[in-house]
Image (cartoon, rainbow, N blue to C red; front, top):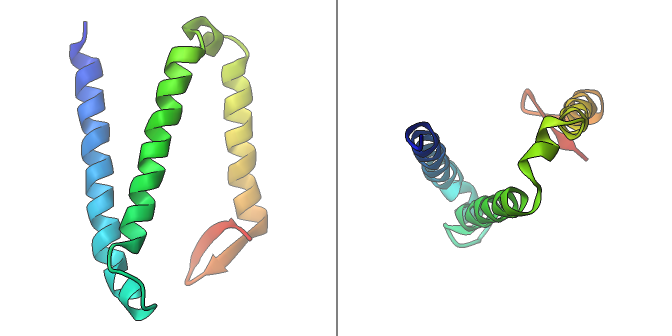
Length: 102
């Protein structure tokens, strides 16, 4: 049954595209104030999105499905939770938002 997979991929693609538009519209003034080309932040975000797709494809092709059912999934969840707490504890506060680690 490919329907749900295709729908999920289309939703993810739509969210990525909307996010790219938002990054471009929110950062164009900042880039111009810094004397950089208007698409600087947008280009960086596109690079990160492409790298994310590449990593996802590599994980999909290299790591067998049964590995994700075992203890590896708990290790990934644990690392994710630890990173969230690390940002909360050691992150930098800028304009009312807790940012990534300095």
